[in-house]
Amino acid sequence: MNKNRPSHSATSLPRSPQDEAASRLKRYAITMGIRIACFLLMVLIQPYGWWSWVFAAGAIFLPYIAVVRANAGEESDARSVESPELSLDAPPADVVEAEVRPSVIRLTETPPQTGTASDSRGTP
Image (tube, rainbow, N blue to C red):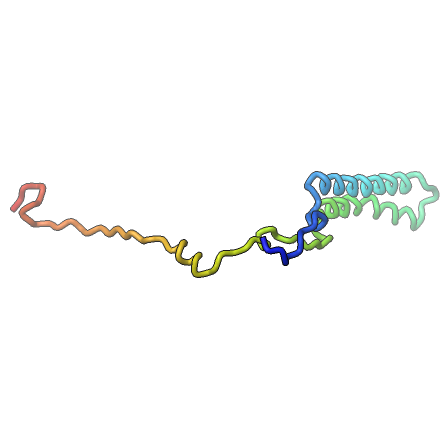
């Protein structure tokens, strides 16, 4: 290991799948709770007016928004993840080429010769 290279930080790693799923579930539940509140406010507030249409729009469109946000995951948070393979010391290129070069065996078939004395049918 080369001592001139910086050490890797555990904070540059992405979140675990369990933590990410819990976060997405929480966002989905909050958005759907707001949808239920919009539906109830749309029905319960009297007299009906322009705000009833706003609550109706929330009750109609929030499920779509909740699903899109839940499926988006953490792609919006761009984190730089460092590959541990980049920190490994690589052997010189000429050594790698010499070790990787395999020997090649080629097989070819020749068509059978017909009409010879060694024919298996016994015809001359």
